[in-house]
Image 1 (tube, helix red, strand yellow):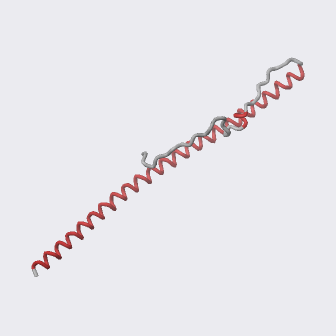
Image 2 (image 1 turned 90 degrees about the vertical axis):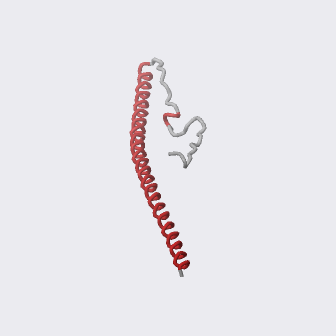
Image 3 (image 1 turned 120 degrees about the vertical axis):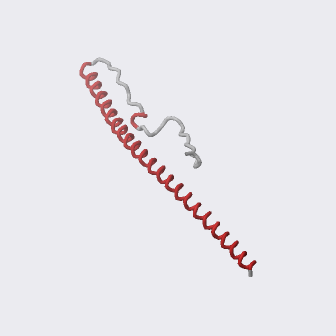
Length: 115
């Protein structure tokens, strides 16, 4: 009877230890999850700021391209009216299609273990 009681106590202690270990793991995983959620929120905020800045740059690009076209048309009119030869620069393709790069695109490698 005494050994049965000791065996039951050891079994209960093992279960308590397992429960403590699982509770510790839950706590650790919750902290890790909270940290990941915070990192995701920070990345989303950074993305929003970069996206806004990119939209501003796109609008500025469009405005500058329109100004260049307008100035080129003024130069053409001056050339036609005055008879003087005016050096009118051509708008580079990179200005007309800024997302078509003249160089090969290299993929950006990501590592899921980087912070």
